[in-house]
Amino acid sequence: MNKLIDMIKGPISFKKLKKYFYIVLGLLVVLDVALSLLHLKHPAFVWDKMPGFLSLYSLVSTVLIVVISKAIGHAVLMKREDFYD
Amino acid sequence: MTDIWIHPALLFFLAACILPFVNEKLRPSIILGVPVLGLLTLLLVSQGMHGVVSLMGQEMVFGRVDKLSLVFGYIFVILAFIGMLYALHLKGNREHVAALIYIGGAMGAVFAGDLLSLFLFWEIMSFSSVFLIWFGGTKKSSDAGIRYLFLHTIGGILLLGGIVLHIVQTGDSSFVAITEGGWAGGLMLVGFLINAGGPPLHAWLPDSYPEASVTGTIFLATFTTKVAVYALARGFSGTEMLIYLGVFMTLFGIGYTIIENDIRRLLSYHIISQVGYMVAAIGIGTELAVNGAVAHAINNILFKGVLMMGMGAVIFMTGKRKGTELGGLRKVMPLTCLFYMIGGLSISGFPLFNGFISKGMIISSAAEAQYGPTALLLTMAAAGTFLSTTLKLPYIVFSGDDKSLKVTDPPKNMIWAMGIGSFFCILLGIAPMLLTALLPFDVVYHSYTADHVVGSLQVIAFSGLGFMILLKKLTPESTISLDADWLYRKITTAFMWIAARFAFLRYIT
Image (cartoon, rainbow over all chains, first blue to last red; front, side, top):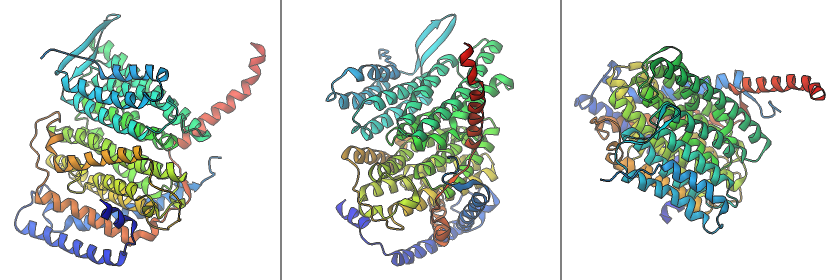
C-alpha cells in the first residue's frame, strides 16, 4: 500500500508511460483481430464482424464528443462566471 | 420463519427524531448503527406484502418486499452507512437529521406497494433533501434550493395528478406495471422522469447538487435519481420512448462534462449520463436489460459515491471547486487520488471493476434486442465517460498544472468512507455473482468472455488515445455553462418583479 502511495506521489514520466501505452494499443488491436479470426466473437451486427472496429469507433467517438461539445459550448453555452450576477 | 417486519424507514425516522436529544458522544453510534439495523431487518424479512393498512377506504401497502425492492433496500442501507461515516466529523446534527429523514423517505418509496404511499414518501424525500442543499450555506445554495423545490413540487403535483386519475379510471391503487397510456400514465411518467433528471426537466440536478454541503451531496447523488430509476423499472419497463430519452441523456450529460469547470457540477452532469443508461435499459425492457438497469443503479450508487466523495474531499480541504484553480493534488492527497481513480475505473467499465459488469449487461441487452444504433451510441457514451470522469477531471485536479496547494488528505472518517466504497466497487467487479444473485430476473449472462474484455479495453484505451491527442483542447476554462435552469431563473426573476409591483397591496389588507 505504501509503495502504491509513493508511486502516486512521485514524479510520473509521461514519456515512458506513452511508450507502454502505445504497446497496449497495438496489442489490443492484434487481440481483437485474433478473436475475429478464431470466431470467438458473438457478432450481433455487421460492424461487430469488422476486426478492430471498436478501437477506431472509440477514437472517432472521443474526438467527435470533444470537438462538438466545445463548439456548441463556445458558440452558445459557455458564459463568463458573473453571467447570472 | 416468523414474519418480523420492521419497516427500515421507521428506523431512520426514529433516529432523526431522537438525534437532537442525545449526547454528542452517542451520535456516531446512532447514525452508523441505524443503517446496520436497517440491513438486519432486510436480511430477516420474508418476501411478500407487509404493513397493509386501510386508510379512508384506500388500502395502503407499506412493505412490498420482492427482489426488486430488496436489492434497492440493501444498497440504500450500505450507502447510508458510507455517507454517514463520511459526515461523521460534522459538529452539529442538523445535516444528519435531514439525511436520516431523506434516507427514510427513499426506503419508504422503494417498499411502497401502492401509489399513494409511494407519493407520500416521494414528497418526504423532496422536502428533506432540499435542506442538504441549503446547508451549503451560501446565497447560491439558498437560491438553488428554492429552484430545486420549485421543480420537485411541480413534479410531485404531476405525479399526484397521474395517480389520482389512474385510481379513478382503474379503481386500483396498487403500484404495478402501468400499461395504459393517456393522461394518467403520462403524468406519472413525467413525474418519475423529473426525479430521474430526464431532459428538458433535468436542470435542477446540476443546478443544485454542486451547491449542497460537501457531505450532503453524497446522499443527494444517491437517492433521488435511483428511486426514480426504481419507479421507472417497476412501472414503465418496456416503454419504447425511454430508449431514445435514455440514449440522449447519456450523450447530453457527457457533452456538458467536457465544457464544465466546476468539479462537482461536472460529476452532476455525469449522473444524468449514467442514469441515461438505466433509463434506456428500462425502455428496452427485456429481462437482461432490466437486470442491467438495476445492476447499474446499484453499481452507480457505489462508484458515483466514491467519485463525489473524492471531489468533495478536494473541496473540503482546499476550499476551491473550479478546475482552473486546482492541480497537482496527487502529491499531497494521494489516498483521495487513489480512491477517486478506483471510482473512475469502475464507472468506465474497466474489467475487474463493477461498472464493467452492469454496463456490459446493458449494451449486450441492446444488441440482443437488435437495437443497433442504441448499442453504438451507448458505446460512444462509454468512451466519453472514460475521457471526462477518469482522465480529464483527475488529470486537471490531481496532476496537470501544479498549483502547489498546501493541503493533506482529508480526516480519517472520510478516507474510510471512500475506502469502503472503493472496496465494494472492486468486490462486485471480481465477484459479480454477489450482485447478480440479487437481481429481479434469473437470466444467464457471462461478463468475463474474451469478447467483452477485449471490447471494453479497446473502448477505454482508444478513448485514452483520443484524450492524449486532444489534451490541449481539454484545458479547463473559467466559464459557467448555460442550461435549462436559465429559463427557471428568468421565470422566478419575472415572478419576483411582478410580485414587487403589487407590493402596495400590503397597505390595503
